[in-house]
Image (cartoon, rainbow, N blue to C red; front, side):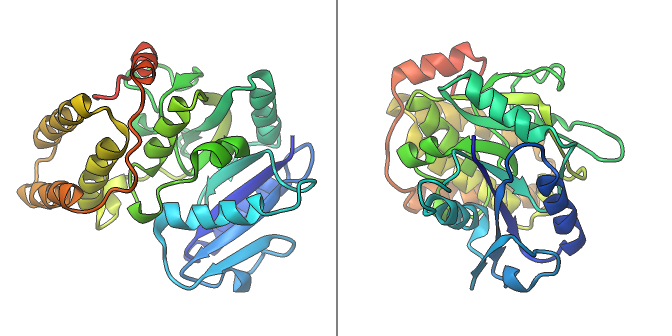
Length: 294
């Protein structure tokens, strides 16, 4: 199986990027065709990128927009060079060991309907796996692989046939929930998603709230996610559950105000084309332990 890789960077972690590229180049099997996307910077001028494709974007398009441009580079290659699956990797991570690509190939080969693989993410020093990095409601043992209903965008692999069929990430979302949007569309098209503990990305422990726009984007994009993908009857249920959870979890009145501004913006602004999933997909997600209301 031919593999490609998309790595998005803003040029602010040059040493980590080089380490990541070295970990990709060191994988067993056929070489991986890598494209490094400079999100608002000239990736072509970064050090240590010899032999790697680069794409310079004149402005920061956000995570989904930048990754989509990288997908386009690889998907436009001639048929004999076009990858059959694409690794999507954060620029401050690195693959743990030279077998990762072979594990990805084996996972896709074992199941022709496997569309997306979500990697295990652990801190390179403590080896801790954060709860939010295991895409299950009941996390359980992070070393246990399973079918899931979403995936981790910066530590994943997607079959190119999935992108061909359901499209890439939602361009305008900038950051938050873009992977879940793509995951739900893939599930509705009959693909499966697996969390694989045998493929590890070493990544420093972080908090999503470190981003200044986190609370606004997480609320706005969750409304967009529901409006685009859920049957009409489930939209108020899903958003109601998340509103209750957010009010219970956020201790800061200022953060809550930002969240509610984002929630209102999600209703006022266009969310993109609406393609509600079928009730059979709702039932399938429920059987997998995550009905689309939580």
